[in-house]
Structures are given as structure tokens and as C-alpha cells.
Amino acid sequence: MNEFQKRMRARLAVLDPTVLEIIDESHKHAGHAGARDGGGHYVLNIVSAQFAGNNTVARHRMIYSALGELMKREIHALTIQARTPDEI
Image (tube, rainbow, N blue to C red):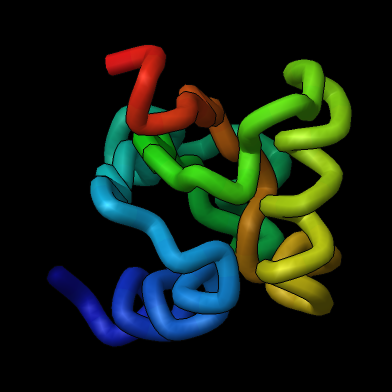
């Protein structure tokens, strides 16, 4: 896990996840406009009871809110799978 993934993990801790997997796929996007500007490509698998009762859009908004300014530059693309413990 690189330092940036550790920063992401720390931010997402507010969602009290029971599963939190962050995969850096930036190497697959070398030369892509976002990659040239320094933004990474990540895959996020997160399970949290806080997602209960929320649809996919609301769950993604919770994640974007937790990540804050990281979404503005450091993260160019984020593939998200957000589930509740009952959905796994």
C-alpha cells in the first residue's frame, strides 16, 4: 500500500468500513490526460453499515465527501463498489 492509499484509507475511516480495499490502477492509464496531470486511477471496494438505506448515488456522495479535496486533483478516476454488510 502506497502513501496515497494510506491517506485515502484514513479519510474513508469516517464511514467505519468493515471491508476497505483500495487498488491503484494508475499504471494501466499511463499517458492518459488525468494521469499526466498527476491524478491516479483507483478501484475502491468498501463495505459499511452506514450505507444502509442509501441508494448507489447517495453512497458515492458519502465516499466523495469523505475523500474531500483528494477528489479534485489526486484522484482522476475512482471505480466504486459500495455495499452494506448484508449485501456481501
